[in-house]
Image (cartoon, rainbow, N blue to C red; front, side, top):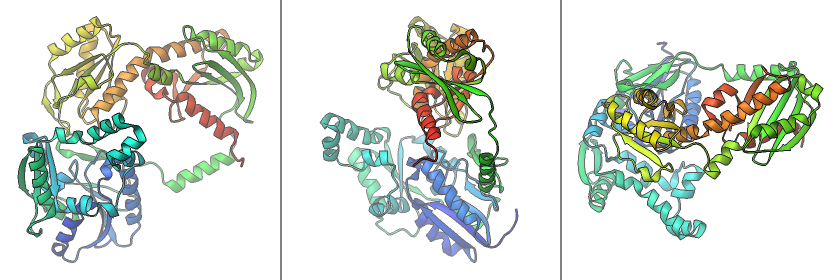
Length: 535
């Protein structure tokens, strides 16, 4: 590890600020270049990652800094994907700040195993999130609209029933906790406000109250440069942080994407260079009312022809044929690439269409199946902990029985979602295999579609994906058949995603949920292309 000086850059969550200042006298001559970020950024992991990377880039350029200590855990994956170019990053192997306060991920997991429904407080946490909260907020607009308003405000904006629902949702966290745990450190005021608040919460809600002794040894190792400590991960310059299963918590991936300056230079060169795509492209948009077609010349950017025909939902090929038939045949025969966009997936969500799908969930925690908008939901045995370890094995007989019940209920596919499957997908993969063996039904696994935490959201995504597969397959098959009739049996088909990018047709068949908002996104991309450079 290169030694650039005796300074350590530190980027830390605001809840750690009091603990960091408390440890400064024990650091000797070690100088900290400290950047404190707002508390509770874990509520918006994308914003957290953005602010973390910005602070890292700043500290990476500071003279004499030999490494950058990150005072965050995984924190909703907000600390995943970080990198420095000149000096190493150093991270505590913890899921969140609780592991830092307790001294290790292992101790946190032991507490979690004994008392999973615990709400932890510390003196520093209370100061930053309660006492100083009016001075420093970092909510997303959505959070502010729901959490930053009173019942009266909500009632005025959304009506009494909706306001009551929102307030009930805001307080739902209380139903998931049974213990208030205050983590105490030496040097706190004798009657710390945070400790009194923890006791008051327990009394008010009928929880157990526990006093835990804090352990600042992990934070001290992070700040003092004792980076051989196994509780820390040192990420070499030029590598990205990634999440890792088990006690590792964090890891790193070799190599990062090119420098921003290099990317910008390549982009500017590409703007001046001749277009990479040559020839003629065909765009097809199958909407709820009309199917539109356009022939486009890549080299000049000119629209050569356009046509429209009514969409026939029971026979999509009729609309595609009608639009193609209205285009000049000679131009259509020159097509070398086809782009497809559609609002069918979006409309299917709104209209509640799609094939019947069963949902199989796995979690140590209770899930209210009645709150999920699917008729067939089963909660299976089998659980993975948040650090990726198996807590309870899958019951193969139960899976086979539920798979048969799903088929008998008319389900044509199954979605599988397990807690922490983005860390360890073993249980989802096992259940999917057993379901296929027992019933022949294909299963869509939540971890295959998104790496975001929240297995209930992944369950919804997987179920919606499974519902859409026949719809998008039918559309792509219809387009392929119509193109073959026009003498284009082997032309490449690209499908527009909801973010405006494209994917191969074979990928769209597997992940049709990506086509939600395909049509609107394609419209925005097209408009930007047509009006680029205009006032």
